[in-house]
Image 1 (spheres, rainbow, N blue to C red):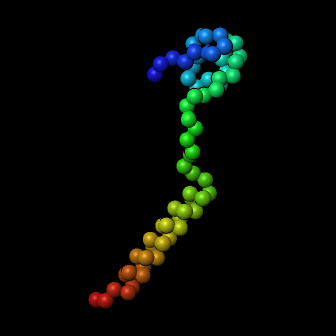
Image 2 (cartoon, one colour; image 1 turned 90 degrees about the vertical axis):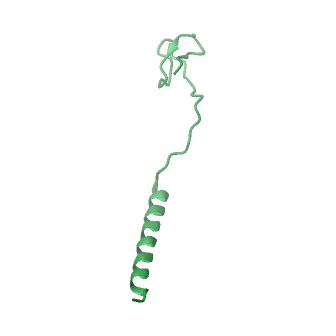
Image 3 (tube, rainbow, N blue to C red; image 1 turned 180 degrees about the vertical axis):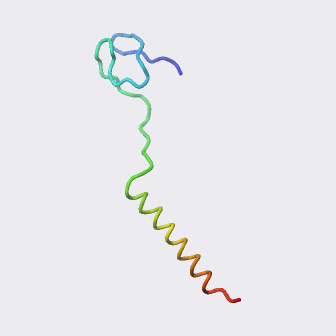
Length: 66
């Protein structure tokens, strides 16, 4: 990975830095912010799909003719 430089003082800074350690200028990340996978909606969706799968399996098991 190529080094990053402070736009204010021009000195090299770390990639995870929020501000320049030399001059104190805030560094705005040019990397895109992607949405994270998680939260209550995703948890609810996964459990709903799981329960539907279980119900479907139970219905199939008890309604098949032998």
